[in-house]
Image 1 (cartoon, helix red, strand yellow):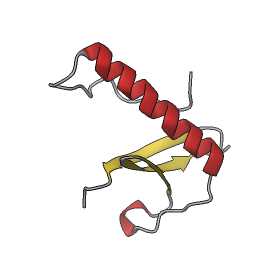
Image 2: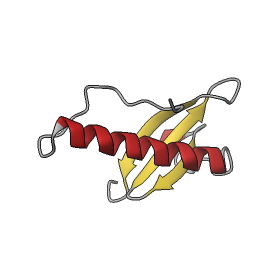
Image 3: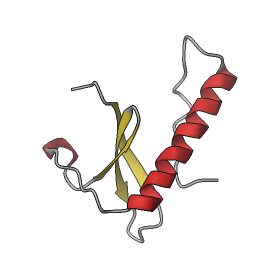
Length: 84
């Protein structure tokens, strides 16, 4: 079990539940690996996400914060790169 989870309410109208589940697991694994690699080296530059950190997992920008011990990461936002 990784350090991230996504709420179960997110689904897809175009893909089966199994395909969506596999995609979410893959995405969470990729995010987790980036966070482990980069840690707190890239603080967010955007005012809206002040106090968070950012990693890019194509095609998403992921903003996250760390728990008090630094062992748990909380995803604050996942935004597609094309979103403003």
